[in-house]
Image 1 (cartoon, rainbow, N blue to C red):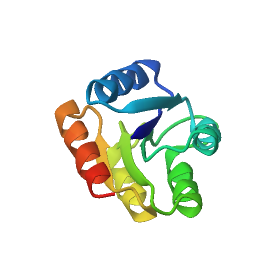
Image 2: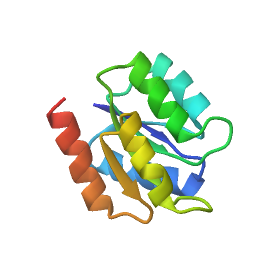
Image 3: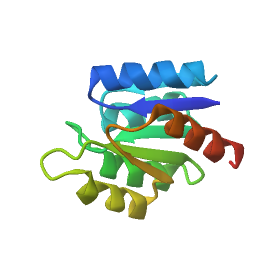
Image 4: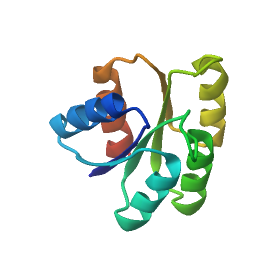
Length: 122
């Protein structure tokens, strides 16, 4: 199973990669939504973990694009919320099709559990 991690924060991407590889998944990375869509076309992932606030193409746009082009894809949205807090973005991410939402900082064990549940039921 392959996971695409989209986050403009290098440390967060490294953390997510390490955690997901440790859990036994192959990981592809992208620094923003536009790059994430290019990666998804080249190497389709089974699940995408995306940040919401990013330059170039933010997460909400990326989620709706992924759902349009890859109907069955599983998506987890994460957000530190920028200036207005994650409460503002995470419900919108859910409405656009994110299967799970996490606000930063999150418990990595919970994230791994969610990934496993989503992929086991795929």
